[in-house]
Length: 97
Length: 483
Image (cartoon, rainbow over all chains, first blue to last red; front, side, top):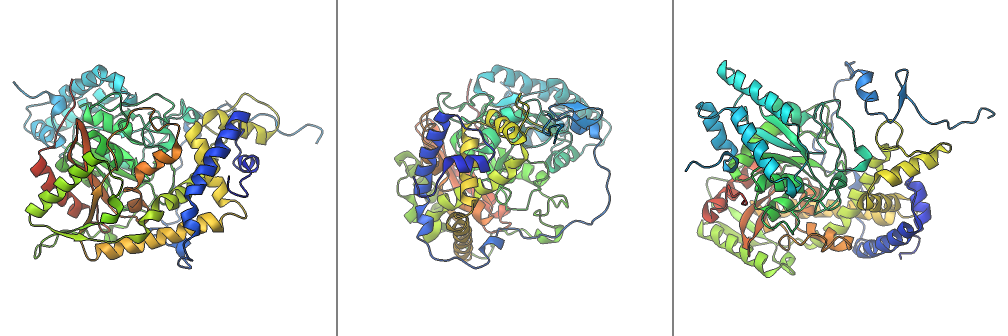
């Protein structure tokens, strides 16, 4: 496994619960895949603006004008739960807090 | 005996519709019957027959009233299940989106409707387009119509299985690292990944936004070109979509022989049957008067690692939206919000999606981003420079599309690295934003094999012209697997 790969930390960052057997399997597989990525480490520095060099030919923004949004009912149809025209979520704050 | 409707290409069907020898309803009914008879291939996640027939009747009414919308009017186009069609399921073959119905049309759905095409069904795919075999689909396997024990490829495996078995004449795929071209190769089809920005991504469920493109798949070069013409166009809702005045196409020069670049150093490890089909294709081009030029692409070896860093990094960010709150699967759990999200994602995503989210999260994490993500961006820039440099000297670059023909289902499922190497030849075009296509070049036994051509930006017409030459020589257009 590459030095520094802490599968529990990565899973926490990714908001993914892992079962114990998944934990072991993903740690091994990621180690193997990252080993294959070692070729990247051996290359020299790239162009300083490499991050901006994605092939976006025309990054102009559209006019900032108000538009007609889709009706909320269209979106609520896909919500796991809804109540009174709102997305219903489980209680996450205690009354006492 | 008249040819069955399911074996005809879109251009021929358009002619028959225009001459009133055929109605769109009769065509839709024939294809629905064909789809019902080939259900075991797992091409479709869902197919709304009533909706298709309603669209067909509307097309027939337009034609009867002298208001035909063009060559695609009345012709079904099957749609991959990661492209939004209003009122239809949009599942990405994932448990996470089971039951989700799209509230709006993608830009390509709008454009196809404006051209009169019938939007047909929801095609199976690898979950969230992550895979090369359609085995990561949560809705079931798709099978290769030429050998159902083998993969049709992926991630657009449902699109390829649908076309190769005659369930539709045209289909949409999406391509992030080869997801249109690899299944096209494995199923004997023409599949094109357009120049980044030629086709709007509005309404395409995001996997890796700097790499994703929607593109056409068909059983002939002409049909692929017909569908591409309907898909391409500016769209202000996708800031990476090219403006109208930035769309000057590149064509083959009339005053000299076409030049085809061959990166021979990359061909090591190609299976013998695939290599033979490739050499035969080069022979066709040589006989056609094309000049074959050896080219060197020294950084191409970095393409697979660079791609899997960039693509998974972007995927880990794009898929953060699936939190089980506003839409998608929600775990039955109260209390801690982070635990709820983590459990919802654990239950909603399959193994490959989780693997890529974890990988992408790691390569972006503090202390590792420079070593992985930063290096991958630098490699990407270098690969783009090398490809553009080579394409300044030749008109297109030729390789096999995939190093081997379609593998048996299950053969690579336990080894993600082997699966990732399927994309060796197709990935660089995504990293560099270049157009690329796969066209049938021969057979490896009974299994189709494709030739891969990469062109300069906006060189789609140039690539289609080169592909047409090979198609004429091989006679491999319009093949439908029996029964």
